Image 1 (cartoon, one colour):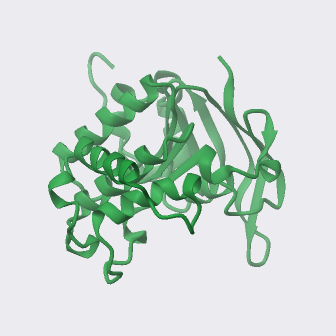
Image 2 (cartoon, one colour):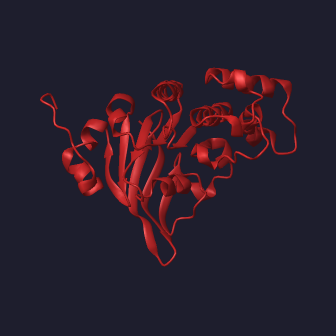
Length: 249
């Protein structure tokens, strides 16, 4: 299986050379669903921002489809980034449909107006995420879970090869989490490569193909059963993780 994303010896520093990521390595296979997990301050969001080209590494290399990220001019078409829902300004006067239509701007440009077919596609994306009835509702009037669905619908409309989500399950109900997980699996099965930052260790074995365990450096990367060992979790989380032992595991 080919690797779509390759990170090699990545070093990112802020301020007085304080390392946020230190010699971090990982390779993401194509058509896979991968979770990035680790404690607060582990560098998870920094890692994905480096992958999308929003942060310039101090040292190291990031490749997408065997091409250096710094040499890729169409990153906004190749990669769809779904930030944390708090990144949306609740006071900005924009409706759900217009947020989703932003997913087409990479192909349209910022001058050309969306066509009827673009709007129809945006409505179909909203319907897929159960949000079509709220298409004209202001984004600031939505709940946290509803905002997350709108952001995912925008990503779906963008139709990128790689989809990266920063904590999509934070503050949402179980029903919404299941809907999102099912749709992420559907995207993977259609050939997309999906990367998800999450704190939910319980869902990893049931829903993800790979786990990237991170705490400033890569603690482990691989299949959930291989990565989520007692030793790796203690190494990553220290004394802040409590492991429940079961007779069958």
